[in-house]
Every structure is written in structure tokens, then in C-alpha cells.
Amino acid sequence: MSEGTIKKFMFVNRKAPYGTIYALESLEVVLITAAFDQDVSLVFLDDGVFQLKKGQQTKGIENKNFSPTYRALDGYDIEKLYVEAESLAARGLTEDDLLVDVTVMSRAELGKLMDEMDVVLSF
Amino acid sequence: MLHIVNKSPAERNALESCLRVAQGGAILLIEDGVYAATRGNAAENHLRDALSRFKVYALAPDLEARGMGDRVMEGVATVDYGGFVDLVAEHKNCQSWL
Amino acid sequence: MANIEVNGKSYETDEEGYLVNLAEWNEDVGNYLAQTENVAMTDQHWEVINFLRDYYNEFQIAPAVRVLTKAIGKKLGPEKGTSQYLYDLFPYGPAKQACKIAGLPKPTGCV
Image (cartoon, rainbow over all chains, first blue to last red; front, side, top):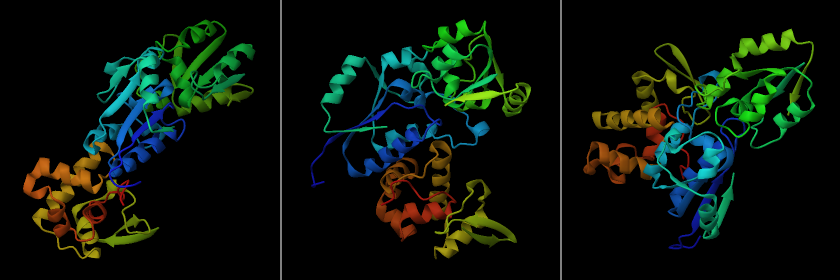
């Protein structure tokens, strides 16, 4: 990447945590990307909204609970978190169920935002 | 027969297939499959309709890991790993809808 | 995998010397790991180590250097929130060396 070029990166998270490795992998790539001072957006839609659900307790399944790490993103200057409203509704969730501050937007708005990106990474 | 479903109803049709094909017995939801048993999810009514034909269980540690332990729909029983083993032992056969 | 021995008790470490189970950490283990890194621990060092452990408990990751520097500045005062200050304490990299002494895994995105 040439110096001074800032690109718009979007990470699209569509998988529930723990059942597959996608959510954790995405989070790790996001944290690494933060070192390159790019314009990073995170999107959570479909089952991906479950990644941000409050109250995850993973002791019983002997997995690492990585949900607190989403709260660290702010310190990494990653502040653009978007959640699709329709995905929340289809899962009986509301914004209050989420463990970080996000912008909830409609499917149509999200699609528009996606169009504006330079690079979209899908997990 | 014990039917085990480990996929989210929003991502795969494993539960749908199971409900369509299976003739009765018990269904145990594990891993991402537990989301089907939570209140307000899109498959809720589908699963509720099946409660007359099946005894439905969800694995508690998987619900808790996902922060969904407190929103299990009525009619679904939760079990721990010991209960999982008991269910397998109680049924003469089982099938995992992968 | 390797093992270190502190006060007659054995602790598992990875091939780079990081403690495998962070719950096993205590100050003696911290001091031992500091010796292996040739770091003479002072109150200033411990301040950073304790900060890192608190950060890990809250967020479940070890912060990248840039994030650590900023967060230390906020918590312990701007004069300490510089990479100069942190590199003076931990010459081979605050993230890498301080994390090791704090018993944390190597930071994600540590370049």
C-alpha cells in the first residue's frame, strides 16, 4: 500500500460465534488491519449479529469468550460498527441486547454503504 | 430416534429438513442449533408447531456461551452434557443432521 | 513447549517463553520472566505490567503498542503515554516484553 493512500475497508460478519471459526478470525484480522490506519467499517448482519450479544458465558463449552474484545475496538480507533435492523428483528434482538455501541441501519442503507467501499472482506 | 441439530436455522436448512422428514421422537439442539429455541427468532413458530410431535431439548452450555440462556422458548427443555449422554443412551438410535 | 521453574513449582511456556496458562501467573513468575528478558523491575515497570493485566482481563486481548501507549497516557498520565517511556522500560518492545512478563499471550497484530 503506498503511503498516504487511505482506502475504505469493510468487514462483513455473517456468522454466529463459536459454531464456526469465522467470527474470531474476522476479529483478529480487524485488529491487525487497525495497525495500517485505514478507514475501517464493521458490518454485522444475518447470524453475525449474534457476535455482539451481551452476556456470553463460554465456560461450559471450554471456548475462549472473545466477546469482550469488541469493546476494545474503540481503543483501536475502529468506531464504525453497523448492524442490519432486519437481522436483529429476525432473531428477537434489539439494540439493547448488544454489548457495544453500534449504528443500526436498514438493509437498503447498508447496501448503499457497501457500494461505497474500496475493499470488502467477507466472513 | 434422537435427532441432533447443530446448525443455525437462519444459515442452514438442517432443522427444516429434520422437521420435514423425522416422524417423531426427540430433537436435541446443540451448538449454533440452539438459536432455533430462542424467543423471537424467525424459526420459533416452526419449532413450536413441532412440539406436539417431538420432545425438544437444547444444550444449556451452548445457550449460555451465546448469551441466550435466559430466552429459551416455552416447551423446550434444557440439558447439560450429562443430560446429552442420557438422551443418547435412552434412544435406540440417533441421527445428526449436519 | 517448555517449562520454567519458580519457587519449586513448574510452569508451562511456549517455544518463545510466553506463559501458557495466564491464570497461573503471580509476581514471582513475573520477576522470573523479567530476568529472562534482562529487565530489572521497578515500580514503573510494575505499573505497566498491572495495567496490561487489567487490560487483558477487561478485553481478553493484549493491546497493540500504539493502543497500549495511548491507553497508558490516559490512565497514568501523558508523560507516560509515549513510546519513548515504554521503550525505556522495555527496550525490546513494550508489547512483546511487557506482555511476556505479565504472563499474557503475544499481542495480536504485533509487527
